Image (cartoon, rainbow, N blue to C red):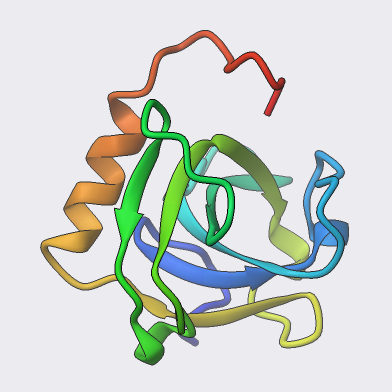
Amino acid sequence: MPGTEAQRGDVYRVDRDATLERDPKPGPRPMVCVAEQPHDDLAWKAMARTTTAFDGTYDLHSPANPATGLTAEGWWSYRFLRSVKKRWTGRDDICAYLGTLQEPVRSEVLQHYMSRPKAKPANGA
């Protein structure tokens, strides 16, 4: 069933309770799977999307895409990397599947993630 096992480029609306790191922002936020982590039974790696906190050093423009629940312009940011619990993946109440990014956006987002500096940004995300 689509959305129950995260694949690279899949977009979810993820509640902070579905992540290993407690996101300080209340409520759910859009996140894209950037690494499935098949050898980890617990979680997959996600990059969150913001519509308010742009930082040109860490963020990649994300156009609005209502088909995947992204109703406003925003930015995918590796400042906000999270580990999403596999057991909640695809559950509408905590980690709802919204769809898959289409090319070329999918490749751009994955390249943005892969080219990030390996040291964590100063805010500890």
